[in-house]
Image (cartoon, rainbow, N blue to C red; front, side, top):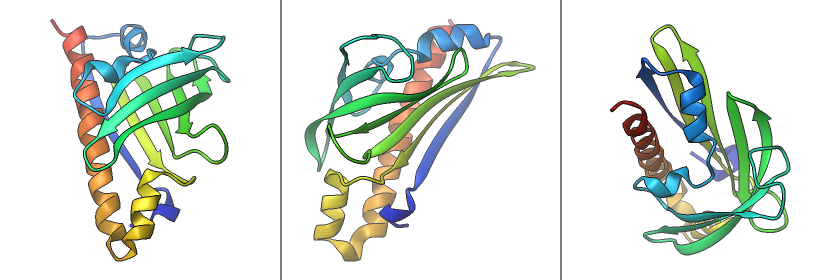
Length: 165
């Protein structure tokens, strides 16, 4: 696994008896991951518009063992209202460190909610760690993908908990 290949991880959950609209109301919130056990510590809108629309910007503060604490400038780059929103995270200039998304689809049994993330292509703390330990690139990326997977699963578990009570 190589950083330059932009590895991707995805988690998906069927929430039975729930509508797409109910799920969307929860996942269309930049602060959702702060509710679950993950890296995002805080999220705040930067300027206007302060809503899930293409071009809107927000700032997320993250903390992770081995990487420390950092702030990412995020921009919403794609929106299908009621179904999908995609954002990039990174520094104030250059290519994004990562791309993230929430998606919601209807199912005959309820709603399917999905979160995915793609690493790179821009330089990041992770790419710096890889440069310092090139012989461990595959392991470093695999661990990071596992961290992301656990965080995203925690997000979807939290979403399910809000809807199935």
